[in-house]
Image (cartoon, rainbow, N blue to C red; front, top):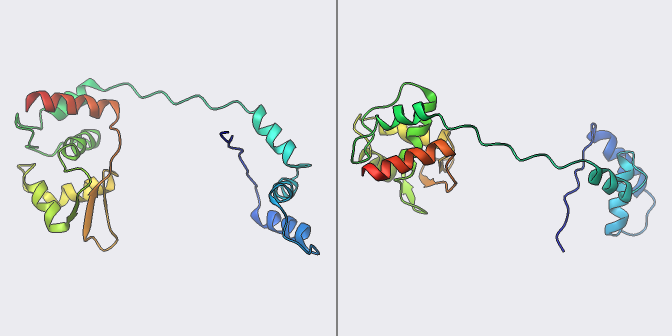
Length: 177
Protein backbone atom coordinates (compact mmCIF):
# COMPACT_ATOMS: atom_id res chain seq x y z
CA UNK A 1 0.00 0.00 0.00
CA UNK A 2 1.44 3.38 -0.97
CA UNK A 3 1.71 6.10 1.62
CA UNK A 4 0.19 9.53 1.31
CA UNK A 5 2.50 12.38 2.22
CA UNK A 6 1.06 14.46 5.02
CA UNK A 7 2.62 17.92 5.39
CA UNK A 8 3.80 18.86 8.84
CA UNK A 9 4.60 22.49 9.52
CA UNK A 10 5.11 24.64 12.57
CA UNK A 11 5.69 28.34 12.87
CA UNK A 12 7.84 27.94 15.99
CA UNK A 13 10.18 24.99 16.44
CA UNK A 14 10.89 25.99 20.02
CA UNK A 15 7.19 25.72 20.94
CA UNK A 16 7.05 22.36 19.19
CA UNK A 17 10.00 21.10 21.24
CA UNK A 18 8.49 22.33 24.50
CA UNK A 19 5.12 20.69 23.72
CA UNK A 20 6.78 17.39 22.83
CA UNK A 21 8.94 17.48 25.96
CA UNK A 22 5.87 18.13 28.14
CA UNK A 23 4.15 15.09 26.65
CA UNK A 24 7.24 12.88 27.08
CA UNK A 25 8.04 13.87 30.70
CA UNK A 26 7.04 11.23 33.19
CA UNK A 27 6.68 8.45 30.62
CA UNK A 28 8.34 5.23 31.61
CA UNK A 29 8.32 3.71 28.11
CA UNK A 30 9.17 4.89 24.65
CA UNK A 31 6.00 5.88 22.79
CA UNK A 32 4.88 3.69 19.92
CA UNK A 33 4.51 4.83 16.32
CA UNK A 34 0.88 5.92 16.58
CA UNK A 35 1.42 7.52 19.99
CA UNK A 36 4.31 9.54 18.60
CA UNK A 37 2.21 10.65 15.60
CA UNK A 38 -0.51 11.80 18.00
CA UNK A 39 2.06 13.67 20.12
CA UNK A 40 3.41 15.46 17.07
CA UNK A 41 -0.09 16.43 15.97
CA UNK A 42 -0.99 17.70 19.47
CA UNK A 43 2.22 19.73 19.66
CA UNK A 44 1.06 21.84 16.69
CA UNK A 45 -2.46 22.29 18.04
CA UNK A 46 -4.41 19.37 16.54
CA UNK A 47 -6.45 16.94 18.65
CA UNK A 48 -4.68 13.90 17.18
CA UNK A 49 -3.05 12.53 14.05
CA UNK A 50 -6.44 11.70 12.50
CA UNK A 51 -7.33 15.40 12.47
CA UNK A 52 -3.98 16.30 10.91
CA UNK A 53 -4.49 13.66 8.21
CA UNK A 54 -8.07 14.83 7.53
CA UNK A 55 -6.89 18.43 7.13
CA UNK A 56 -4.15 17.33 4.73
CA UNK A 57 -6.66 15.35 2.65
CA UNK A 58 -8.91 18.43 2.37
CA UNK A 59 -6.13 20.49 0.74
CA UNK A 60 -6.21 20.03 -3.04
CA UNK A 61 -3.00 18.82 -4.65
CA UNK A 62 -1.10 21.56 -6.46
CA UNK A 63 -1.44 21.54 -10.22
CA UNK A 64 1.71 20.52 -12.07
CA UNK A 65 3.65 23.51 -13.31
CA UNK A 66 3.42 24.09 -17.02
CA UNK A 67 6.65 24.00 -18.96
CA UNK A 68 7.55 27.51 -20.13
CA UNK A 69 7.16 28.00 -23.88
CA UNK A 70 10.20 27.36 -26.04
CA UNK A 71 12.05 30.51 -27.08
CA UNK A 72 12.74 29.64 -30.71
CA UNK A 73 14.86 32.75 -31.27
CA UNK A 74 17.12 31.88 -28.32
CA UNK A 75 17.50 28.32 -29.61
CA UNK A 76 18.44 29.64 -33.07
CA UNK A 77 20.87 32.25 -31.66
CA UNK A 78 22.55 29.57 -29.58
CA UNK A 79 22.63 27.12 -32.51
CA UNK A 80 24.63 29.68 -34.50
CA UNK A 81 27.32 29.60 -31.77
CA UNK A 82 28.06 25.98 -32.66
CA UNK A 83 29.98 24.73 -35.71
CA UNK A 84 28.51 22.00 -37.89
CA UNK A 85 30.65 19.42 -36.07
CA UNK A 86 29.08 20.44 -32.72
CA UNK A 87 32.04 22.45 -31.37
CA UNK A 88 31.15 25.67 -29.54
CA UNK A 89 32.78 28.42 -31.65
CA UNK A 90 32.01 31.39 -29.36
CA UNK A 91 30.53 32.06 -25.93
CA UNK A 92 27.06 33.65 -26.26
CA UNK A 93 26.52 37.13 -24.81
CA UNK A 94 23.06 36.55 -23.27
CA UNK A 95 22.80 34.48 -20.08
CA UNK A 96 19.86 32.42 -21.37
CA UNK A 97 21.83 31.55 -24.51
CA UNK A 98 24.86 30.66 -22.37
CA UNK A 99 22.78 28.17 -20.38
CA UNK A 100 21.51 26.62 -23.62
CA UNK A 101 25.09 26.38 -24.89
CA UNK A 102 26.06 24.62 -21.65
CA UNK A 103 23.38 22.01 -22.36
CA UNK A 104 24.98 21.49 -25.78
CA UNK A 105 28.33 20.85 -24.12
CA UNK A 106 26.74 18.73 -21.39
CA UNK A 107 25.24 16.41 -24.01
CA UNK A 108 28.70 15.65 -25.36
CA UNK A 109 30.29 14.83 -21.99
CA UNK A 110 30.74 11.11 -21.29
CA UNK A 111 28.03 9.60 -19.09
CA UNK A 112 28.79 8.22 -15.60
CA UNK A 113 32.50 8.91 -15.90
CA UNK A 114 34.48 10.70 -13.20
CA UNK A 115 37.15 13.12 -14.39
CA UNK A 116 40.05 14.85 -12.72
CA UNK A 117 40.28 18.60 -13.20
CA UNK A 118 42.88 18.06 -15.91
CA UNK A 119 40.75 15.34 -17.54
CA UNK A 120 37.58 17.44 -17.78
CA UNK A 121 39.63 20.41 -18.98
CA UNK A 122 41.02 18.27 -21.78
CA UNK A 123 37.53 17.10 -22.79
CA UNK A 124 36.22 20.68 -22.76
CA UNK A 125 39.19 21.90 -24.84
CA UNK A 126 38.05 19.48 -27.52
CA UNK A 127 34.49 20.82 -27.46
CA UNK A 128 35.09 24.53 -28.03
CA UNK A 129 37.20 26.94 -30.10
CA UNK A 130 37.49 30.08 -27.96
CA UNK A 131 40.11 28.86 -25.48
CA UNK A 132 38.46 29.20 -22.06
CA UNK A 133 37.89 25.69 -20.72
CA UNK A 134 38.03 26.99 -17.11
CA UNK A 135 35.00 29.23 -17.78
CA UNK A 136 33.08 26.28 -19.22
CA UNK A 137 34.05 23.98 -16.35
CA UNK A 138 32.97 26.56 -13.77
CA UNK A 139 29.72 27.42 -15.60
CA UNK A 140 28.76 23.75 -15.99
CA UNK A 141 29.11 23.29 -12.22
CA UNK A 142 27.24 26.49 -11.37
CA UNK A 143 24.39 25.56 -13.74
CA UNK A 144 24.01 22.20 -11.98
CA UNK A 145 24.98 20.21 -15.07
CA UNK A 146 28.19 18.89 -13.58
CA UNK A 147 29.27 18.28 -9.99
CA UNK A 148 32.68 18.55 -8.42
CA UNK A 149 34.08 17.49 -5.09
CA UNK A 150 34.80 20.20 -2.52
CA UNK A 151 38.52 19.99 -3.22
CA UNK A 152 37.88 20.35 -6.99
CA UNK A 153 39.61 17.09 -7.88
CA UNK A 154 36.75 15.05 -9.32
CA UNK A 155 34.10 16.12 -11.82
CA UNK A 156 31.00 14.20 -12.92
CA UNK A 157 28.21 14.95 -15.38
CA UNK A 158 24.84 15.15 -13.55
CA UNK A 159 22.20 13.10 -15.36
CA UNK A 160 18.91 14.94 -15.81
CA UNK A 161 16.35 15.59 -18.51
CA UNK A 162 16.99 18.81 -20.40
CA UNK A 163 14.29 21.50 -20.50
CA UNK A 164 12.27 21.77 -23.72
CA UNK A 165 14.34 24.53 -25.32
CA UNK A 166 17.59 22.70 -24.54
CA UNK A 167 16.12 19.47 -25.95
CA UNK A 168 15.27 21.32 -29.16
CA UNK A 169 18.83 22.67 -29.38
CA UNK A 170 20.28 19.21 -28.76
CA UNK A 171 18.13 17.75 -31.54
CA UNK A 172 19.35 20.45 -33.95
CA UNK A 173 22.97 19.83 -32.96
CA UNK A 174 22.58 16.07 -33.54
CA UNK A 175 21.09 16.65 -37.00
CA UNK A 176 23.92 19.01 -37.97
CA UNK A 177 26.68 16.67 -36.74
